[in-house]
Image 1 (spheres, helix red, strand yellow):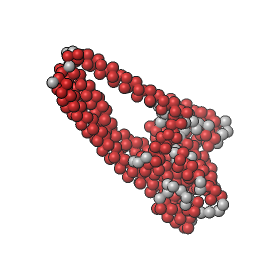
Image 2 (cartoon, rainbow, N blue to C red):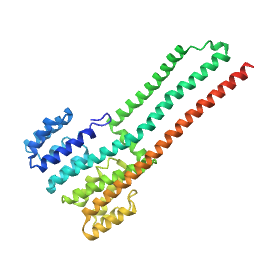
Image 3 (spheres, one colour):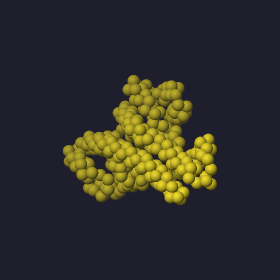
Image 4 (cartoon, rainbow, N blue to C red):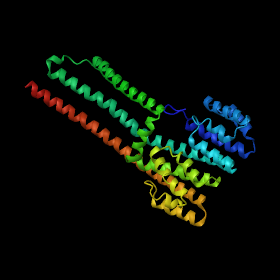
Length: 345
């Protein structure tokens, strides 16, 4: 479970889904599979969830019912995909797809973290060294040119600097605590979604990843035999963005009235022309499930390019911020120095 969410962490979902796929392919019954996972998974929270799912299945619940009862801890995407696989008799496909999905997400997350590590280090270094230099310059010049400043004491300065950084860290801690509270209340989701959906360079990444999940889920649910409007409703829930979800749900009335998917999604703010063309081809040729998979892969590739671009932008922004800090230190030094000389004479 993460700090901002009660869901099981990504690093636990990857081995969990892979072991589910492997056990099911080996022909192990579901009850024994979850019993095996309950005993072998290292994370005690995962073991607890697997144990409760096993007990519910033993009591006569379906896999979908048992998974939905743990929706507080399992990602919505997992719950919907498992339910679709059980209805359509394609649990083997669903387990393998979930394993591949979370492995791809974990690899992407690691790539993002690795790419942001250097800019984050540079920004932190610029903050601590910049504030250290600026405060020291001002105090040294004051002690040299102003008699009321007294002699400069490095020890006293270090204590003062640590007190300043302590107050800064306390402010950061308060902001983080507020963010955690808002996340637990469900408010932060809307705030962050507004930024991620409408502010560049986050918007292209958010939209494309969300649509990739949506169309991938759509292809699985259609393959499981669910009605189109139910597929749209359940797939929109896995986007993890309330604004995109609300936009996609607008297609349901059109589908209920007998319109095609292409016509129903015509008013969407987020679909690209290529997606419309692939949807149209799928409906015309009767290969909708295949085309939806292609649409999902298309958006996933677009998201990867958007991530690469966003990382370059963030790295450049970090360099600009560091340059501004260095420039401010230099300007502050000469400004304080010349000001002190002017006052002295």
